[in-house]
Image (cartoon, rainbow, N blue to C red; front, side, top):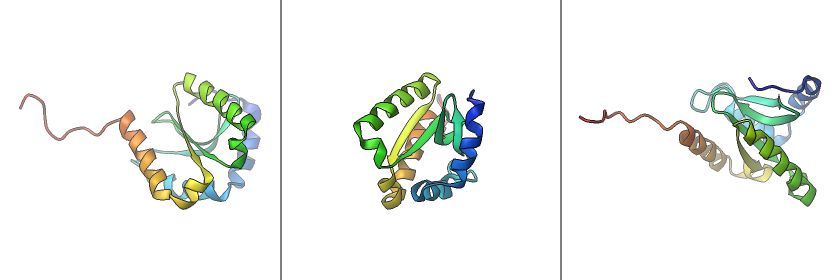
Length: 129
């Protein structure tokens, strides 16, 4: 598990109880190891941040962005946050809440593509025949 600021634990519990509609929908598709048998966590503290979704086995963070992320100040904060998470060896995938609500199939496909890039499926054929 990644190191986190223990002061964020209570805040993450509150956020888990108050997911946005888009977060709730995505959670319904990735919880209970529905994608490649991988465990995801929601509203997980990592360092000094709380990420929307986190998969420890794949070192993957998924963020669902609402309107505040598209303002200049939000983009700057997100860039700093993403850089920090990436220095911890994590990949960060960002989706707009609109994408999650209107294109769930595409969102799940992109998550699966990234997971395949990180851990490609093994070929059923042995090399050297």
